Image (tube, rainbow, N blue to C red; front, side):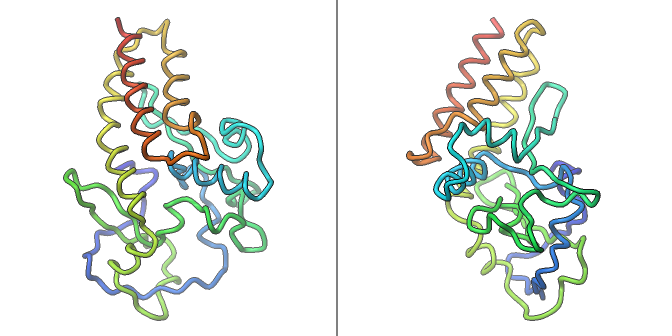
Length: 223
């Protein structure tokens, strides 16, 4: 679990009942610099949504340059993207008048909030409750399992398991890349993980193929 992205969370049971009410204050969308991850599937969905809305027609990499920023996870070069923020209070770039302007395509981290899911190393998940905004925990109670069944889709689950299982092998390969070939390796990493997707085609099949392509490319750069 990446500490900078998983602050202020506590484990919860699958059947636990939690009081929660969104008061549309926008508080959870402020002071979020480097803390709202954009996973590969999030990027694909956001690009597709913005394109269908007529707000984006360039490449996925151009969209990322406008709305996201890379965050290094490990010195080997493995990085993720997080949403950009604006203003003195580091507000999410997509927050306007205390409302999310990409509601149908907002990242998984936002969609499942205040709950967080993380692979447990098998085929299941551990679940956590984000407690950084205590005033949200009022109102009607919901069951954690019902919340996640509604907002944590089967596509999310399959992607996360695939991403989780491939992360360490890819990081190990990145560690072995000679310095002279590091830039080429990271460009391949960025393309296969984040930008080289056809929006008219299903995501998971492409992601699986991209992982295989990236693995082969990195191995070739080592030798």
